[in-house]
Amino acid sequence: MSEQGLNTVNFAGRAAASSHFKALYAEGMSLVEETAAYLDGPGRTASKVLPRLASVLYAAESMRLTTRLMQMASWLLLQRAVNNGEMSRDQVLVEKNKVRLDGFNVDKNAPGWLDLPEGFRDLVERSLRLQNRVAILDREIYRPKDAVVTPDNENGVRAQLNLLQTAFSA
Image 1: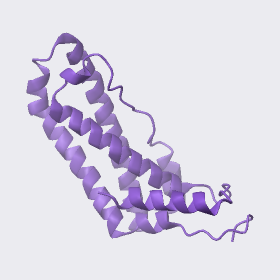
Image 2 (image 1 turned 30 degrees about the horizontal axis):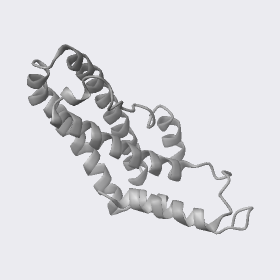
Image 3 (image 1 turned 120 degrees about the vertical axis):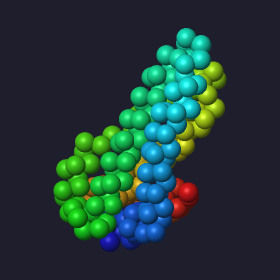
Image 4 (image 1 turned 90 degrees about the horizontal axis):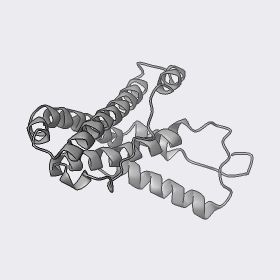
């Protein structure tokens, strides 16, 4: 029971060690592989015929995309290591401070965005959705124990339901 007299269940901690985490892990690693194959193959070919403005945007967004995916892959690997008992929670806390799960947003109104190949835009969208799910799970798992929990049960329940929906959607 916390100082506010609330009982909370850490669904996120359980979700991170469940089959749902394994599915999230598989989805993340699959997206990394799919993106690499796209950027080395069809994406490379498509980028050569883009208008100049779209070509510059493609170069910038492909770097953001790969950075976003590498950060998420790092987090997923760290979480898998703690789940498998290969690292302690304290070791993961030190390492995960090097991982950035926020930022890397995309301006879909940027000039040239609609000129980018549809397959590339799809990879960007999927990576952003995955990044959001991983970031929410990270905040819930690694929230400091002394963090203030809202005394409003309705909002607390809604937050837990949102977390469950995010963690378990694939």
